Every structure is written in C-alpha cells, then in structure tokens.
Length: 234
Image (cartoon, rainbow, N blue to C red; front, side, top):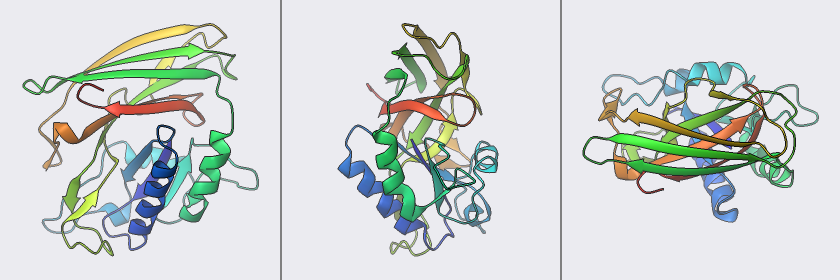
C-alpha cells in the first residue's frame, strides 16, 4: 500500500504520479496507490477544487515527511531511516522490498454499489496463515476515485490534469476496525456499509470511477497486506 502525499500546488507531484503509475504497471495486482491530498500544497485558492479529507492530517502526522511528494510503503520503517516517509525516488526500491516479504494474513474483498441509492457494501475476509506480531490488528477500508480532472501545478494539462487513486473517504474511520485474535488459522469476515455522497467538498464522486481498498494494519502504522477492487461489482 503506497500512500502518496500530494497537492495541487506541488510542482514535483506529477513526477511522483509517474513513479507510482510505473510501480502499478510493473506489478499488476500487487500494489495499491492511495493519493492523500494534504498539507499547504493541497490548499485550494479561489474557486479551485478541494481534494483534502479529514483523514489526511492525522495520517501525515505519523509519517515524519519533510516535503511533497513523499509517501509511505506499507507504513514501514526501512533500515537507515528515522521516519516512515520516503522520497519519491525511493518508492520503487522500497515497494520491491515489501513485495519480497511474507505477510501473516491474506486479504479478500468484494464490493457492490447500488448506483441508484449509492449504497456501498464491502465484504472483507482475512485469513491468518501465521501469527501477527500484535494481538490486535485493524481492517481499513478506503474509498478511492480515479479520473478526477482538475488543476495541478506542472501537470501540463491546465485545469484538466487527471488525478488518479485519490482518497475520498475511510469507511472504517481514521484507524480502522479492530480484529482479534490474530493467530494462525483465524478466519475473519466483516461487512461494511456506507452511502456514498454525491460529492465531497463539492467535488463530484463519480461511482464508475470508484475503487475500494482494504488493508490490515498491526497498529496504526505497519500495514501487513491489502488489495483493491472496483467499487461496482468488485
């Protein structure tokens, strides 16, 4: 799970997007990118759209980031680093390290959206193939949106830059839904429901462009595993 901290006024963020897209293309089915619009560069001016969420600042506060774009890969603290935040140039190597590691839990997801009522139903299934290092883990369910067209400094598209992987909402709240026990052989099945509003901060939420990501954290930091599916019939 690559959480990429970004903003519409960040001049290097389009380069970060290119790096994230390359990681996705080169590792199909193994990577989820979550673009978190947050910080001063994400603050709109005048009539610009506001892509921020209530969740961005608390997420950023635990990363130790010192610029934009920066991000975390599974919120993991890599050797030689004092914080989990990574420069965009480290995204690829760090992702490769994580994909070479073993997770104690498998994550499965299905998603349905009633396009009339906008009711979202997400089923998450966890199966522990070994013991987690902590007795309580947390299921996080994120609503992501692709193809959000808007401004982006250095995006080369004026007000029609195509924002992808945008975090719109955390269905399970800021830090997720607690799971216990977390021992070998444990099967966990949870269902989450949420009515998707027509817009967030007056930015339309287009259902056909929505995806659902579910991932499991040890605490509020280390991510053990995750995946994503289409919002409609995912």
